[in-house]
Image (cartoon, rainbow over all chains, first blue to last red; front, side, top):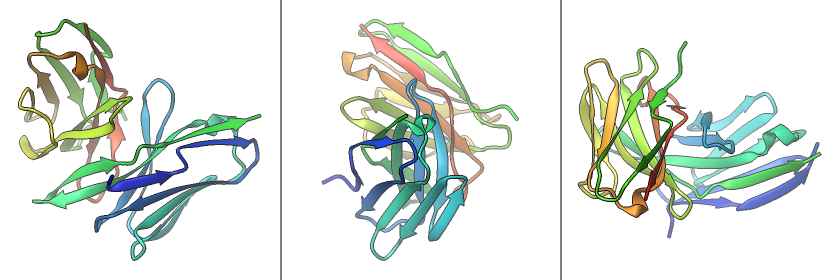
Length: 111
Length: 112
């Protein structure tokens, strides 16, 4: 069983729709990362959060440490949001962090 | 502020050869980590360096190695290349464990 599970695997939305991507993990963590990967491979770090909620523009990330669950929301989605969204958690040990990644959610936003 | 620079961007190698990839982190970032991305396995952690010391290594064979220099630049080496080593190799840097990662654009390695 993968330690980080994301859903859905694929998501198609109409422009303007509210998007939710979910991430569940099975280990205790200190923080969770949301990443965005566009075609071509470049990865952008969107959020690093350890509790509560963070907002950046139209993106909102929430985390519930007790339930081991995080969500990434996109409000008023736009075609430029089309990308793969990946959540990652660190497996901590010996003072360093080994990121374990979900399989990613491929989002396509249609005009 | 310059981002994380990976060189080369693309590489084609023959089975059995070895390859060295380079990563220059953001100035001031002392932690550099490496990842392999394939269509089948997704993103997988390779190793992390901090102040020239390898802090952690993922589940990869000994053919995969790396190092970090005093200026925080890092290299990873893969010896005796196999077809399955074809992948996008990404590095990321950060200031420390309480900070997010900045990723490079990656090196796309093709083994033929």
